Length: 159
Length: 308
Image 1 (cartoon, rainbow over the protein chains, first blue to last red):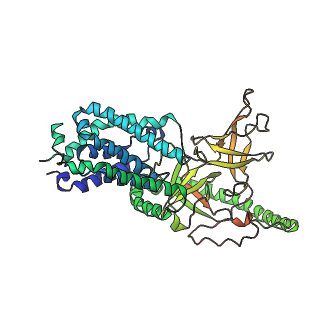
Image 2: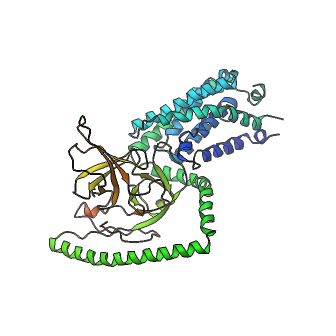
Image 3: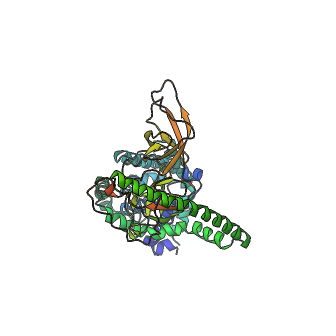
């Protein structure tokens, strides 16, 4: 019995909290620029593999906690997380059929969509920042998808 | 994949059909939050509650850096301590000499103001705050400090470090506040060139070592090395605090405006401790306002010099 099968909700919460802390750990500037969006990756993984536990509500709460951490406008991460989680949810059967490398490509485009949504909301509220560095974390995020999904799958398998 | 698919719980058709509805409700909630937060300060209580919940986690993230600080201060040698002590004593002596001159100048200033019939300058209080070692948004220049509404902070208070203006508070939580740095691309500060009094606005560049002065004509009297001080316009920063030094003046004949950049006086990316000044008294803006009530905070009160 893994920790996940006994307390799936608790497991998802703990993983979410760890991802939230990874999002704020101080890093050197160059590493900070390519820091992947850990929390969104975790949300996407739960939406893909365990839609019941890691549903839209999970995505919304995760996004809101990220907003509490560093939100410029309250609700912008919550909004973007729900949109991404909805897309993953809607196509989850199809995405699961793909090998992990192709999943990573889909993850990358969704991460780009996330950055675009943030950029859009920032722009409407008057805080827009243009800069190529905005699009880097999607690439590192996609590269992280393989080890992350392997790790989470290890902890969530039954028996 | 077969191993992963075991994880999946049965997913009924009725749940799938309500997916769109649930998404719509949550998206509607988020949009309501965004609009409410953008439109006004109505969500302050929500923000404070959320920041209070985030506080233990933020402390945990900042703990390694704080522990390192503590360890390096606890494990210094006797020799380096005595060295530092004598250096500090020396500096304190120098400062006390300057302070004595300053007191007499201040008295003189007050007398002159009285002669002119001007209102006396109100003293400002300051409270010390420590920057929490947490990375906020990578695209922006913001830091989190360990003082919040509980310590009497409000939105829009100027902050300084030992060398110059640092930034201002933007969101105030219960125990923590976010400070926007001078160098944030969304920040602008009204400044004056100390040498000739020329007024302009310095905006952030996104780089902690550079401010931009984009609104000066090509023939403006600006030189490399000029000091920028706050002009006191805008009602956020008190006048006369050092802001930056001009490092580059590029007068491109094909451009109507000069391209000028400046190096901030404050150590924006290295400072660990900053001072949060009390908000600029309304009395200096509106002559009829009542005297400002003193902040009830465990603050280290000191009068900031109005001069450099």
